[in-house]
Image (tube, rainbow, N blue to C red):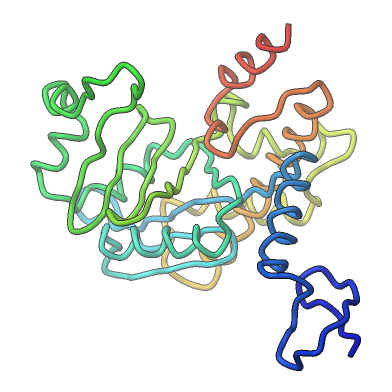
Length: 270
């Protein structure tokens, strides 16, 4: 009988009615080829990451975290027990994407503030960082900090990485703000772009959201504002990536944390 392969879509002949692929692992091979072609074309998908808070001083609470259009919220305040699983689920749903934020120092602090003090000591103090330093000359990155089945670390205030302790993959979240060195509103202002990345209506909505931050409440408007900011950041980074690609600069998904990475990539070409 003649059948259509579920993996590659080509026809093949078989006498086994149960056979769905022309050869073993055809589906995985085709998927691998598609991913390879996508990487060679450098078709980077960006996912914006941003959080929102309410209240001031000791009453401040980190109430909303958005990854792209997906969000979690808690009016009493999110902790690492909420945030780490949500970030990891977002990564496993889209493992090839570049996860980026715009000046994420506040968010990094909120993600980690509920950790025990001794975890913070290993993460931030010079003594704790020294204890995590590897003796190997091959691997320069320090051992990650561990807590409740999670491994994580920060590269200064530029990049956060996270994974379950039993997984070999890393989720990298890069702070892309240093590429632009200005406010997000200024970076996306449609008046400054020959081909704007956002409409006037989108810009006004974002402008209003930022103006109301001091009196913000966890409501539909906050969720809408957060989702829009993540979408516009993804567009902004896509435009930057297109410019880099046009001059031969191709950054990996864990390199979107500042112009130094782009400069190094350019210098390697020369």
